[in-house]
Image 1 (cartoon, rainbow, N blue to C red):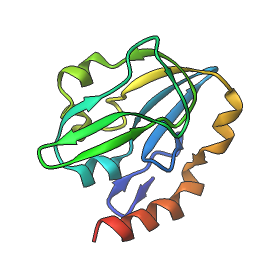
Image 2 (tube, helix red, strand yellow):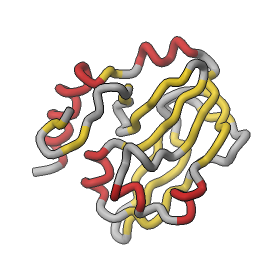
Image 3 (cartoon, rainbow, N blue to C red):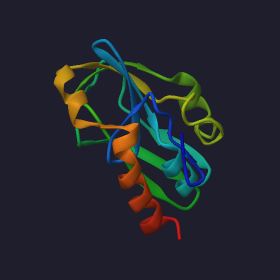
Image 4 (cartoon, one colour):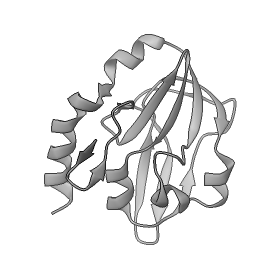
Length: 137
């Protein structure tokens, strides 16, 4: 699915702080939404938690940086970081090229029920349209 000019895949779940989540049993893959990536500009650095670190939903877990801007990276779920994408660590700009292929981390969920609090693609459309209106004029 596309919302205005932004990719918005149907099979993913979305967090209000611009992360996408792909569930796989009791683990999830997390990345940045196309809208966030395009709004930020060319990403030069992403500060992420380390493997083995515990993260908590809605808490700041890092930053996303461009040449002129630093944004917060907010956890969409609670759990343990199982893996960090080393390719993204080495070359964060690849997220700009393909935000849904260049994921940030994989997390073992502390509570699978948290997935129900994320938005499915259809439910996220009004939220995304509001964010586009507010930030991408």
